[in-house]
Image 1 (tube, rainbow, N blue to C red):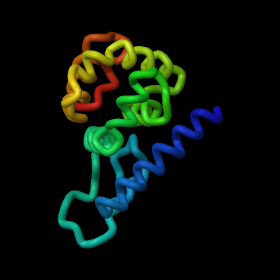
Image 2: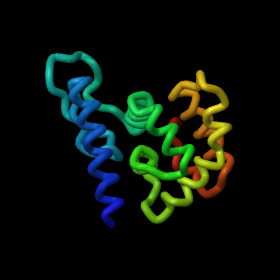
Image 3: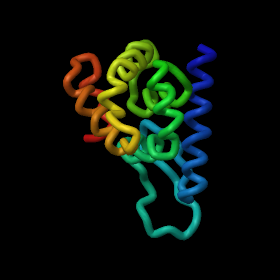
Image 4: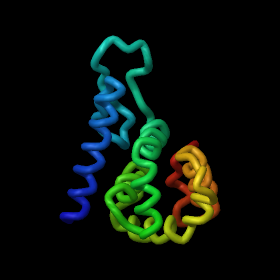
Length: 135
């Protein structure tokens, strides 16, 4: 329970940090709802795909490290953004760890490339095919 609470707090902190830099405050990472502050003409809403992509870009190195070891706050936050139930997250952590070389085939792999590879691997796995980062 403590781990789940810590993960939720980290996710919220990260998303609020993203909101400050983009003048958008996210209310619920799974709902896609947000409120805009400031005079931006951009969309007031970030969908789950955009939230996941932005999270991966901002936290790419930390997320890469967590995937390599098969656990961690950033990997947990990614699982939360993907709406993976807490009871299945440890299975997801092991899955991503085993797919590390596919997700990060080189040192030049970008966050977007990693997410595309993750989608492809998740689509091919019946346990995770419904939890895609990109649609």
